[in-house]
Image (cartoon, rainbow, N blue to C red; front, side, top):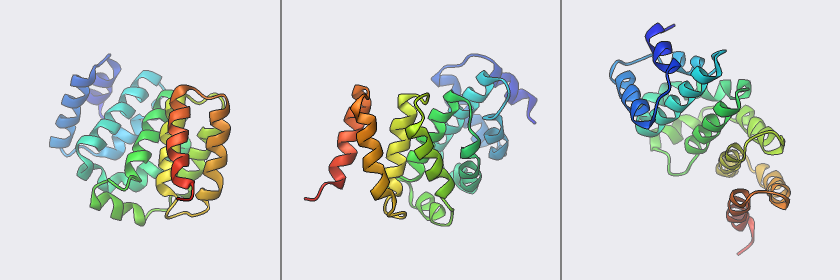
Length: 184
């Protein structure tokens, strides 16, 4: 793959280094599918840093991610690394956001999101999944409810269940999302 990138991802890094590496990859027209593949690396540290880099590149350079959106979505059900789940859930939240750049929203319209929806629901009900993953996954599902109206039937129940014994973060996210489902 890219031995230099693997070497960089093998070392501990902070936000500044992630930003610098993201800019370098963006400028070099790096094959992003290779970075996506590294999020599944056997070394969990490399996989985590690759997912963190991928998320940051999406947030800073969404136009670079554009040709790879379907590949990102197609791989979401394969994510096993708990740290990578957080980044994939956050990417899905941003990909499906009504505030996403127009080109992203248009690209998403041509992609079957059912596998991502299934994965997000799986993360919501899995008691071993981290709270941040559940929070981002619930927001992604909320964002997809317009295109997939059946989510409106399922998501409120899942949120109410999570809120029963959930953390303050889940309580807050659940209340905010549920408020949109209530008749006004």
